[in-house]
Structure formats: C-alpha cells, structure tokens
Amino acid sequence: MLSLAWLKVAVSRVRFVRLWHWHAVALTLVAGSVGACDDDEELARLRQASETVRAVEQLRNAPNDAKRPRLAALEKLECKAQDVCDLQRICTKAYRRHQSALDSARALRHAIGQDGGTAKQAAQASKLLSKAKRELERARFMTRQCARQQGRVVQAYDL
Image (cartoon, rainbow, N blue to C red; front, side):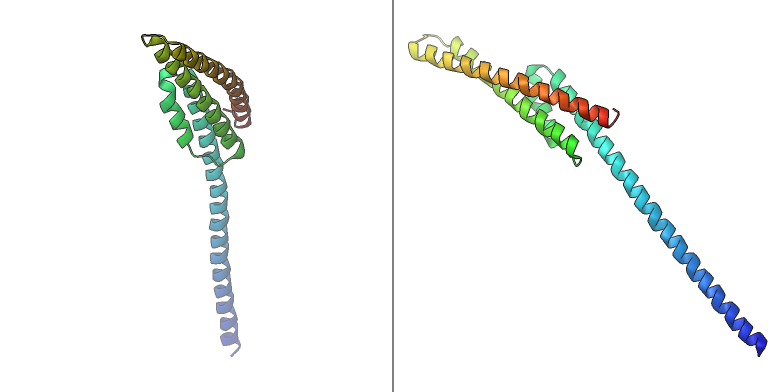
C-alpha cells in the first residue's frame, strides 16, 4: 500500500508540475505578446512621425501649383502621438492659409487681366491685393510655427 500511496503522490506532483509548466509557458507567451505590442506601438508611432515629417517636407518643397494635393495627403495621415498630431494640425492650418493666399493672388490676377478696368474692378482688385497680403503674412508666421514643431518631432523621434 505504501507504494500505491507513493505512486498517487508522484502522479499528482507530475500533474502539478505539468500544469505549472503550461501556466509558465502561457504567462511567458502573454508577457512576450505584451512586450511585442509595446514594440509594435513604438514602431507605429515612429512610422507615423516619419511619414508626417516627410509629408510636411514634400508640401513645403512643392511648387505652389502642386501644394493642394500634398496638403490633402498630409491631412489624410493617421496620427496617435500628441506631438505628431500637433505637427499635422499646425502644418495643415498653415498651408491651408498659404493656399488661401495663393487663391487670392489668382483671383487678383484674373481681376487685373479683365478688359475695361472700371473703378469697381479696381476697388475689387485692391481688396483682393490686401487680402492676399494679409493671408501671406499670416501664412508665413504659421509656416514658421510648423517648421518649429517639425524640428521638435524630428528631435523627439531621432529622425
């Protein structure tokens, strides 16, 4: 009977060890998954920062007639990190303002190019010129803010 009791104890210890082993394996897998999730999230933030910085550079360097699609591309980018979202928001506002100034300048060129320059058209052209100047001054200030925020993101993500 002693050997049968010993066998029962041995079997129950083996079951406990097996059960403990599988729990340890499961905990290791879960911990590894959580670590991998953290790594994946960090890589996603780095990718988003890099894409946003690149989109801002492309927008800034584009000729004026090619800025509108680059602005749309910047607006469509996904962001989750606050500093990257700030970069996207600040630069989007700045280049929308810049685009508005370009649109005002086009309207001014159109108004000036019309024949029969009446006093009314001259007044309209003067208003458009004033609006274009204001928009460009504001856009210049805002694009500087965009560049400063871009520098912060580049430094924070070591891009």
